[in-house]
Structures are given as structure tokens and as C-alpha cells.
Length: 274
Ligand code: SF4
Image 1 (cartoon, rainbow, N blue to C red):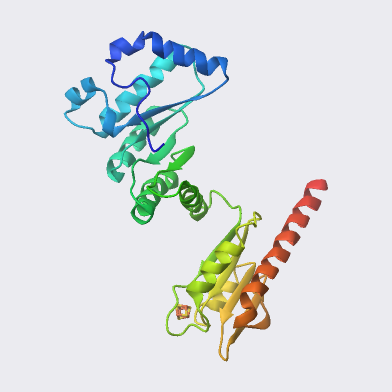
Image 2: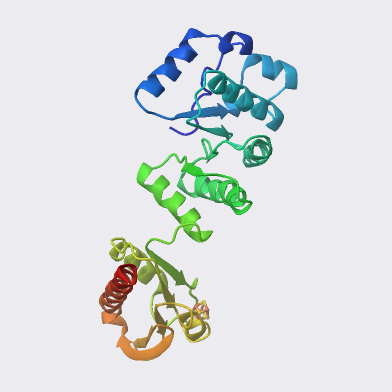
């Protein structure tokens, strides 16, 4: 989807206010109990706004958004959210900030046409991340020229990094260097895949050596720190627990994480039952 055109875009604003198609869309949404997303996009702003402002700018996007809100409200329709997307991070962020000041309507965040997996992820993390950090935004969409599964994963990771979603295993890992006692990068890749099924919020530290390993392990539910002679140390609930060989370490960590997840779930259930 990635942004989409503004609802009723390409019509003069005066015309849209009483346009029967607008009323039809609103009626259909109401009849089917659907909400509407107003999707203002810097790339498809109304001609009269472009003439007024000279180019797509935050003010033009905000005015377009507020105008669309008015159309819905004039028709007594209030189940909507609004986005003011742009592919330019600065433009989108400024438009969203202005919009958040101008309306209490739920805001849907997106950096539209953000690019491929790597560049789009970075743009989205900066744009959506800084807005969410400011407390702006109720829903998000990451738009990448990549497999939509990646879009969901990137969106989820943005929320997780900001502490807004806690589901699943938060893996803390070092970048690795010559000191690593095992292959950190390959291990983390393997663990990310093998732990995808865990929905319980918990943390796991995978650290190449004792420089940072014990410190990070103090703050995680399960930890592994590389050591010498082909083995490392397993930490449970922040405490040093037992040694484990590098060969068996991935299977062992998966087991430990599954066990810990089951414990956390059971504790939550019994708490809820009290
Ligand atoms: S924790 Fe150890 S292995 Fe990891 S980057 Fe730091 S020094 Fe290197």
C-alpha cells in the first residue's frame, strides 16, 4: 500500500465538500461498520494547495489533512484516522508534528516509498522512531520495496526498540571482534530464526567474550558469554549458571529460552487467577 492517495484527492476542495462520491464512500463505510484512513501524500496534494504553497510542504499537507477531516465530520462520520506521508523523512516528520498539534484524531504514521530493505528500514526507523518517541502516532506502516513480511518485522522491531511492544525475545548481542569465543553473528542469526515462535516478552544476551558478557547477562533472562577452549558460560536470571560447549550452545539456549518462557507464562497465569 505505502501511503496511497488522499481520500477524494484531485478534486477542488469546494467541490469535494459536497461531492456525492464522498458521501457514498462515507455511507459504505458506515453501512459496513468500517473506519476510514485519510491518506494525505506529499506526492498527490491537491492542485489548489500546491498553487497556494508552491510545493509540497508540511503546511500544505496539514491543511489537506484537516480539510479531509472536515469532510468526514461534516457528514457526521468520526471513525477515522489520518496519515500525512512523504518519502522525505524531514517533510513527513514536520507534517506529522504539525498535524498532531492541530488535531486529536488518531494518527497513522508512515514514511512512504521509503526504499529497499536496508535504506527503507533506516529511513523508517529514523522517521517513525523519532515521532513515536515524541508520543506522536497511534498506528504505523513500514513501506519497503521488499517482502511484506520484512515490513511487518521492521515495524515490530521499531516498536520493540522503543519499548512499545514487548512480545518475543529481545536479543542483545555484541558486534563481535577478534576476541569472540564463538561466531556471534552466525549464532544470533540462527537464534533469531529458532526463537521466532516465542511470544513471551523476555531478553537474551549473546556476547562474544567476558569484556561485556557478564555485565549484559546481569540484565537478561538468559545469557551466553563466550569463553576459551570452545565453550562459554550460560547465565540464568542474571546469574552465572553453567558452562556449555560452543557446538551444543544454540540448541541449549533455545531449550533454556523455551523453559524460561514457559515459567514466565505460568507465573502470569497464576497471578491472573489470584
Ligand atoms: S564483547 Fe567481546 S567479542 Fe563482543 S565486541 Fe566486545 S570485545 Fe569483541
